[in-house]
Amino acid sequence: MKNQFESNVLYHDAISQLEDAASTMKLDPNILDRLRTPKRAIMVSVPIRLDDGTVKTFMGYRVQHNMTIGPGKGGIRFHPSVDMAETAALAMLMTFKCALVGLPLGGAKGGIAVDPTSLSRQELQALTRRYATEINMVVGPTIDIPAPDIGTDGQTMAWFLDTYSQLKGYTVPGVVTGKPISVGGSLGRAESTGKGVAFCVSFAADYLKYKINESTKVAVHGFGKVGIPAAQDLAAQGAKVVAISDVSGGIFDPNGIDVNAAAEWTRSGQLLKDFEPNKTITNEALLELDVDILVPAAIDGVITKDNARKVKAKIIAEGANGPLTTEAVDICTANGSFIIPDILCNAGGVIVSYFEWVQGLQNFFWDLDQINSKLYSILKNAFDEVIDCHEKYKVDMKRAAFIAALKRLATAMRMRGLFPA
Ligand code: GLU
Image (spheres, rainbow, N blue to C red):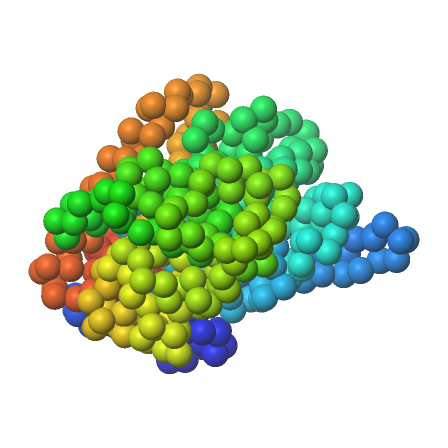
């Protein structure tokens, strides 16, 4: 049965991947039916006083898709496109992401429909604090644990933590992850999503018997929180990063870009089009470059049926959530690209979020080597599970990842049963 969210492309695509995987693995239809809709969704008004004295009201959301394996987990997005359907789709992807990599967590997502770049720091703080207050009854370390996503960062999480803790009367470090280190964040969390992308690319290269070296050309679409560490780690693996982009467009240099210098430029708040003005390239052209590895790490829906035929990369590493539509996945797969699916490829973030949550609950902190080696082994095991499904069911990696996730989730759902019985 169709539901109100399915007109959203991301939701529709998540459902079609779910249905495909379910039919391939012969999933119990009762479980499929349950997974089509979120467990719980809340919509809140978030009024704030702007710097000019006027009051503006934004719409906020938090969706908990499934909590069978543990508390909800997933980011908070500040972006103009945020609505209930998009948030529900992203929450569903979190369910499968956490299940795939074996975390004791369910799937959730939240957000506010806002362009955060249009607000001052004070306005953003007010927005975050009021949103945290409005959803405080449905989040918490044992209920649902937010984290950063597009348009939010460690500062946002610190304000969220502080607001929630003010309401409780004591500090609750486990209520959010992706916090700054000074307020209980984990070493390695900031780079973890990009690091995971680079790990997955190396696993894929090994699987394909492809050697990454100085002739390996990499393009990174979305040189930001995920794209920067991914580019840095791929360069450290010996690859040549030839193109990077941000909202302003990108730069392309066939001889390779100094990734660390570009990262410093971006982190200082400057736009990439001004980094090397004689080497600019559009975001659209970057996706179609003749490269070996393409990392779409910005936002969903950038590769569609309209441009998928022009994508030439051997390996496409989905750093963002849903950068390829289902149609694009099929076209790129038919063209011979090997796609590392988002729920595997960008899971490094939520894996280290899980480490942060555990450290916060125990008040005992780990060193960076421990974190990175645990991250590596969790991702490697998940990658191998997806490969097993890819080979056993003869489906592409996107569908294989859904099958691997569904196996773990369905077992838990069956074991817990339905209430009331
Ligand atoms: N927003 C990130 C994601 O989409 C991280 C979620 C988390 O750490 O909870 O995976």
